[in-house]
Image (cartoon, rainbow, N blue to C red):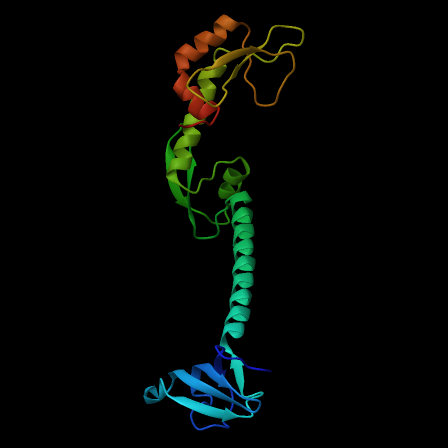
Length: 223
């Protein structure tokens, strides 16, 4: 390796008294065919900082600090990117997983009259059966929201009827903005939809249940 004036170097050998491994940073201030002159910038012995020494036959006894730093920087940047990608992947996997409690975990559920309870998960059949019908919640807020959904759906169905082939079927729609609930004529049956026999009855259902509650609990849209 050929050194030039201005190069930042560190000692990598024990061949010299002061510009050896104890010098973590030095600057080349002069160069001859067989020697380099180095000004010490960082040294384990602080009394050597600022002093200048000649080093004969320097090949293999010093390394460029900037190159080493750049290589290390690129290596770290690559690792950071790889770790960031892995973190995002794991986050996406966790978000896509449905939460299921483990033995000893506490969860919330809704009983037959809409009251929320907290209990400990174990291997008893009742806990597994609650999980199978979607009646296991990680937080009290999730359980409360489910109660709200059940209430709104039950109130809407009091005005509804099953889809009638060849008949007039009206359903509710919300476009994600504002509180307005639209009434739409539907000719095809869709899973999960609640159907009303007329536009007037559908409007009565909206007025009775409340557009804000329908928006929040039926469509799952919150401001």
